[in-house]
Length: 230
Ligand SMILES: Nc1ncnc2c1ncn2[C@@H]1O[C@H](COP(=O)(O)OP(=O)(O)OP(=O)(O)O)[C@@H](O)[C@H]1O
Image 1 (spheres, helix red, strand yellow):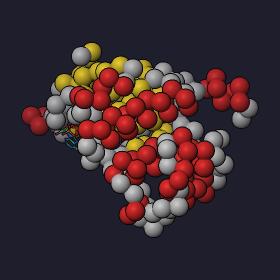
Image 2: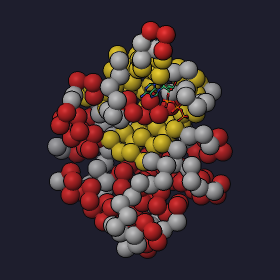
Image 3: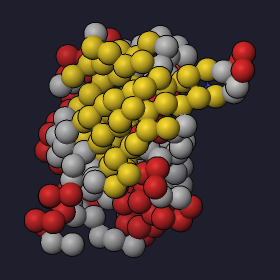
Image 4: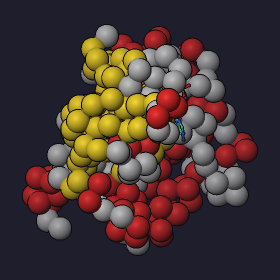
């Protein structure tokens, strides 16, 4: 793919009229109730809301991990709901990045090898070399440390760099500050916003941490499966 085509197809994320229903009859729950959400390349959107509101469901559907009951989920110009099996798994690896609560790193691998592993799995060289990605998250000097020798915030930085190896169109982030103190929480979300802008990725971050919302471009609230402005 040429650079021009790659740029043209990086259209971010678009969820249209997405419904996700669990159960039936009296026990039926609409975890997502006609959700529309568009996130542009280079934009970071925070999703807040009470427990059980549907935030995890939104990330799962946006990431192609859960198929919605109806509606469409478009990433980089492709509707995820039209893909399945190996094609969906491959699409996810090449177009979506995930950042979890505590970094989710492989214990036996050094920071730099966490990133190289992604190159091995996808069979593609990162557009931005792993060394440069670690540098951009402030981890160049700790590139050869394993997760056991890193702080929670440092592990989270490596997790963010790893999520960017495949040059994803969309970055989905679940409670990135859950295990961090106030100062580190600010640092991590500031970093996420910076990387989002620099790499032109469309980022959705679910958080309970209202303290860090100032770093995001937009904040939306989810209540009873519906998405609205705060
Ligand atoms: N696998 C499932 N089967 C049945 N109901 C489910 C399932 N997963 C989620 N739900 C229901 O869907 C609704 C939304 O759940 P979800 O986990 O998306 O909320 P959340 O906002 O992420 O909550 P929290 O902040 O507590 O993580 C809840 O009513 C939940 O009970």
